[in-house]
Amino acid sequence: MQSIDKFNFAGKKAFVRVDFNVPLDENFNITDDTRMRAALPTLKKILGDGGSIIIGSHLGRPKGVTDKYSLKHILPHLSELLGVDVQFANDCVGEEAAVKAAALQPGEVLLLENLRFHAEEEGKPRGLAEDASDEEKKAAKAALKVSQKEFTKTLASYADCYVNDAFGTAHRAHASTALIAEYFDGDHKMFGYLMEKEVKAVERVLNDIKRPFTAIMGGSKVSTKIEIIENLLTKVDNLIIAGGMTYTFTKALGGKIGQSICEDDKLDLALDLIKKAKENGVNLVLATDAKIGDSFSNDANTQIVKVNEIPDGWEGLDIGPESEKAFAEVIKSSKTILWNGPTGVFEFDNFTHGSRAVGEAIAEATRNGAFSLVGGGDSVACVNKFGLADKVSYVSTGGGALLEAIEGKVLPGIAAIQK
Image 1 (cartoon, rainbow, N blue to C red):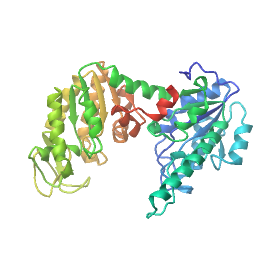
Image 2 (image 1 turned 30 degrees about the vertical axis):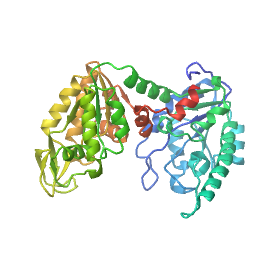
Image 3 (image 1 turned 60 degrees about the vertical axis):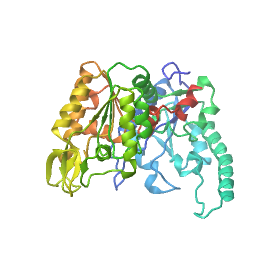
């Protein structure tokens, strides 16, 4: 497999798929440019070699062309970050894009408009009537498959080589993340630096395990984490369950959870996971106390109670001090750590304490030689909020991609480069 470090981009045009799906405020100002800055080493390597760049990305989940999701909003900041006057094409395909790509000189950069303005990028038909028949759906899919091939071929035609640096979309078999790679031979397609780091970090945490291995899984719903938890139960020594999932497990065990978030249809599943943990010799760690509020608000009245004794009208919004201590002890004794999901509603300052305690315990374990991987949007937001991002081994930019990798799935965007 080709390595970006060994490839010389001099005189070559590179199509680089990045993940510039950054948050914008109502005035289209970027509120967090982490993903853009993460791609800079790759982009600067290409420019430094004397190559030129065609950048492809998505922004949001548009169902067609809409100004709200136009990548033109990030153009000034991208130019500033790169120190280059980045050109812009008002569409990712069509005459303007083709002409501007063809005219690119070494050291120049072209940003294409949002790839997802075209249904061909995701390969999902749009505009079908709700009552469309199976035949109509089948015909729409067949037509889209044909146009998707042409769309992908057009994107590939702009460049001499292909670089995928968008780990956040690696779990999608989209035109620009997986299908385009087929138009380049093994010597002319590669991971960018960010993608390389992501792939290595995931492989290390799943295949090069130093024990004890501890995973902290937060999030509100067990249903969204079932496959991840089941896969982890065959790998970890300790599994800490945190966040809203806590109360589904607590209720399943007969506890009183008041108004706390709970998936009543997943109580049997929670018991089954507890049983599987026992069968696999995994130490399943659940919260024993909670910081509760009388409303879902930063200004709620609060108290600390046993997690299985939450009064009616109150809800669990974070773990309590007893649980913080128990979680921290397990984390600090670990050599491999995976954190996905906060312990509570960390967006509210009054309910950040548990997540901060977990983050600080991970930082301490890392200082003492553990390998720690933090991933998933909220966990990343946590370490950034608490100033801990540089105190853990690796912070993943991929949300869904990281989770699917942890589930043991083959990610199309990665497989397309490796084959």
